[in-house]
Length: 142
Image (cartoon, rainbow, N blue to C red; front, side, top):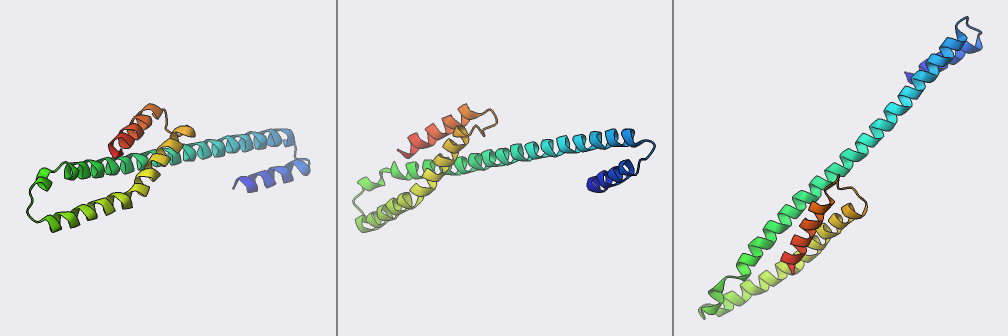
């Protein structure tokens, strides 16, 4: 519609319409407003994308922190002192170590996403909170 409006305005101006100058001015006003509207839309989409990335990081960080807390609780279990079922406990321990190794990449990915958010200033002003989450996850993982 905007292109059609511009084409019609140009046609009227080129045909020496009696209000040609007014039409030309109005066309430029409309095109300027349209340009600013598109720029505002692009900016808003960009902020929404950043917000979505930040929310996804937050969900992933929550999931990782809960998973680590669960695994820490398992690691602190003192049932290993009981000599009964040593073979079963050994298998559980091997499965536990395998699960830790399998999730190491996922944890590193969440840490990298968080650091990327901070580095690119896409935290919507919550860089300190993201940095705190990264520190918390890294400390728990160690």
